[in-house]
Structures are given as structure tokens and as C-alpha cells.
Image (cartoon, rainbow, N blue to C red):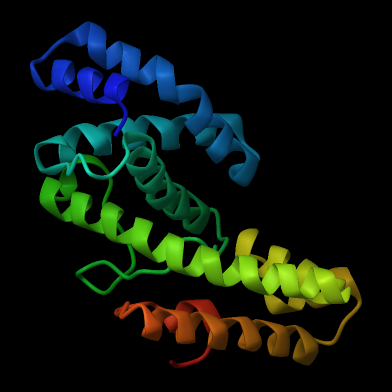
Length: 212
């Protein structure tokens, strides 16, 4: 954590309302942009940002300062964003791939979830994002170098935007089996990365659409 963030955090812990407002001003715009580009709805994105700050405040007593403040906020925002996408009927597959302790994959918003649980989940999610992010970057670079743009388009629609196999097939003029094959290839690579990093409790059924 940088010096400015550490000082701001210490002031917030002392109950300084001005420091809390400074935190919001510092990160609100970036969190809003992060949520809005994925939800394509400003009002819903604002709700995600508000829930993110509430989640951070709830988890503050258990926050490990070895995790950068910005990364921690964005990890919480990603959880809130996933809930928002699910409520709208979309199934985002990346970057949130870890089931919660209940096994449901759903994180209750705000104070319905214990601070220690939220903190552990957010920090664990950072590890997963690093491992899977490295895996996906390697795949994308490989496909790009070989001109495999069909796979690139499938991955974006499936794993980033949360489209169904059928919708991706229609959009790209492919068969659903071809799309399913592209998805299966990526899932197997992610499984290998998870195994190597000793990451457990990933909701593979949600990702692949098939039993793990």
C-alpha cells in the first residue's frame, strides 16, 4: 500500500469523516467507470459503487494492508458487479470464478455478510484473478500471434460479456458445437492453472455449463 492510501486508511479508522469523503472522491470515478462499462447502465453502476464502499467499510476491521487498497476495492466491486449481472439474467464467467463458503457463489451485500468473510473472499479473489489473468493473457497472445481471431471473439463474448453459447454462435456465424469447443479449451487451461496454483472450490459447472 502506498503512503497516501495508508495515511487515509488510518484516518478513516480513527473516524475522520473527511478522510472517508477523500477515499470516495479518490476511487469513485474509477469504480463507476469499471461498473458502467460492464453493466451499460449508469444507475445500476452507481448502485454497485455504493455497495462496494459499504462492503469495504464493513470489512475494514479485517483488512490486510499487504493488499493494495485499490485492488481490494476493485475485488469487492467485482463481487457486487457479478451479483448485478446475475440479477439482470447475464452469467459473467470471468473474472469471478470462486464459490463462497456457502457454495452458492452468491455474496450477500452490505452487512449481511461478516466482515472477516468478505475480506477473505476479496483477497482470495485477487489471487485467482492473478492466476487466471496470467493464463488468459498467455492464451490471447498465442491466438493473436497465430491470427486465431475466431477464438478471441468467442472468449470476449463468453467470458467477459457473459453471452450464452447460442448467442455467440448466432453473432459470429458459428455452430454451437464450435463455440462449445472453444469454451471447453479455455476451461481446461484454467483448470490446469488452478491445479498448479492449488486453487480449490472454483465453480466449474457455472463456467462450463457442464458438471465439473
